[in-house]
Length: 275
Image 1: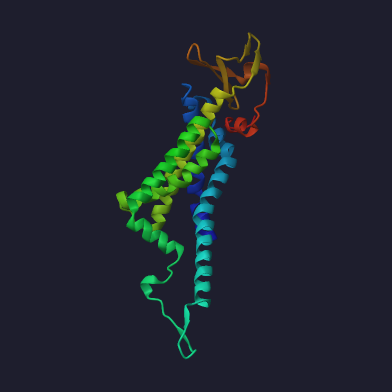
Image 2 (image 1 turned 180 degrees about the vertical axis):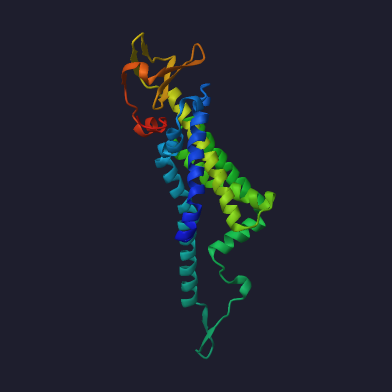
């Protein structure tokens, strides 16, 4: 993609990232029955995508590595194997001692790993899809049980292949560019929801100790009251016993103390913006 084309589509990419950031916030706080739209200002919506920038960048690099570096590596291996086969082509000695090159039939010549892989997929598509589905499901189960982002990354390595195959075979879209765009969008939406689920579970498993002092009361988190996060103007808590959210305006808070998370990046990702 040239620079001119990148400049042309940059507003679309920016809008998509803003939508992804807002979607995660909406789903995250919606899990606790909080309509986050009522507590965000316009700048926080625009900047919401930057809170998960480290996670999204790593995920993008992982996908690019898979699609670009991985393919390039396989092609390089193909070239090396083909080169060696050319240099060490089958040569036999005749009874007179003369060398005679034996031409390998086209059907038995080395075709390269990429072409062989494509032939295997074409020949055994159901088996390949079942294998990808099982691996995706396995890593999703590990992610759900252990709540570790690395398993989410691994699951999407195979999930993206399933999406691409589904778009090609069932939706019927054959254009490579359109396939790539749809695969990218669907994968990013699903991954964003996965990250949202990770943060919700992290709140439940590793709650943060927070004390808020207002002019009327002191509010302290415990086993039943969880700190969810903050915006520029509000602090959010959830009472598991009463099954309702507790929201404090920043203007009413005189002092706040909190014990940092072991994973500070997780804490930052829960804040739509920094105060």
